[in-house]
Image 1 (cartoon, rainbow, N blue to C red):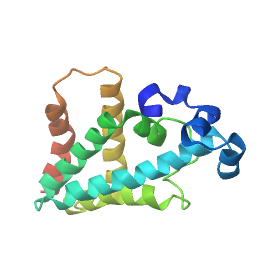
Image 2: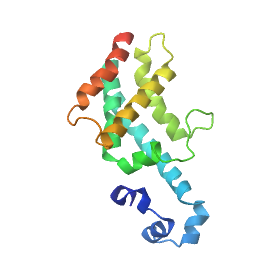
Image 3: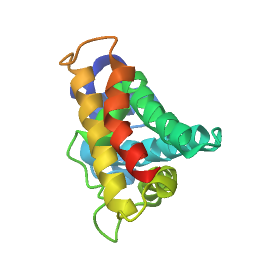
Length: 169
């Protein structure tokens, strides 16, 4: 429903109708729409982790693995905009920077760490992963909002990843 109509169109009443449950049954599983969005986000992190792992392990050279992970992340954001929005844009109670991070989110972040580890050198690999992930999120958000030139995705990835690869090589 969110992919077709946006999160604004998702209400607990419409969702209950769609899944053929009554609203009270839906509320017995979720406190409200925010809890539903948080559950969707956690599932999305699991899906994203699998896609990033697949991209990373399909390449043997560290530089190629990093580029594949970055590309898979941007493809995911482009192909699943409502899910990406639930995961990264909407205010939900899912955090990475604390010890209480959900396992699917930890796995997705771990794929960035794994892709960057061979290239990190003396740099803190988790900080490098946070900055890389943040930069990719910025690109994904700007592309989604039609704020960047179309057809320039490969050049943007080259600019973003070249310093990481050169410093690690």
